[in-house]
Length: 258
Image (cartoon, rainbow, N blue to C red; front, side, top):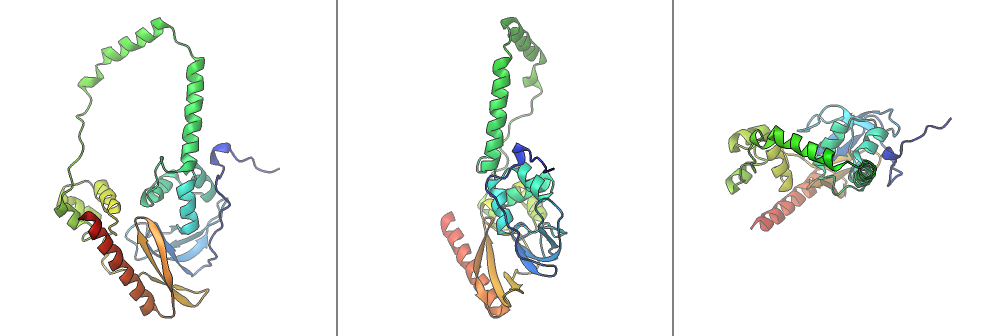
């Protein structure tokens, strides 16, 4: 008997095709921003390659590889759908979407669920007609609680200065937070907003070997998007293309700030 798929987890923009990888291959992960060694495939409804990235600054342990096709799902499908089909927790989905700049307002799958929940709540509200006495009773209860006396003060956080921005990417995020006085989440959000890559003890090469073609591929991540720079016969050529692109994007970023 075929399994019934709940409407809230149906994929709106499928099908999604896993990358043609096998155990031992190297693949670029957009979330880790590093090359990942494929170690296995998941047993979720949509089986996907898993791997680990020894050089990654985040998510270096074993996990699904967030390549272009999975990134497309994260940008288009709801968190509930991605969690169901790829067999991962919603906390993991939230981390991936944040790294890719995905929010509730720019994701069609999430928009659909929000609209459905709003329409359902509105229908219930219209069916439940409160009497004027009940409305007044509830108003009196809220006034008696005097919540405004215990509410925390509203703050907007510490403003970012050019000196604070200059620290981003030169230290690990936790160290940058301690140096600038901002929160760790604030440092991460600001760094991603400015398109500054995370700190690495060793300079990233941007080159990965593709066993299928026998060539080296150069890729770069900019503001959560992964760009393919071409394939090359040698690692040195791929690294050179990556460094040139990195300098080019850094110059563009500097011009936009002026």
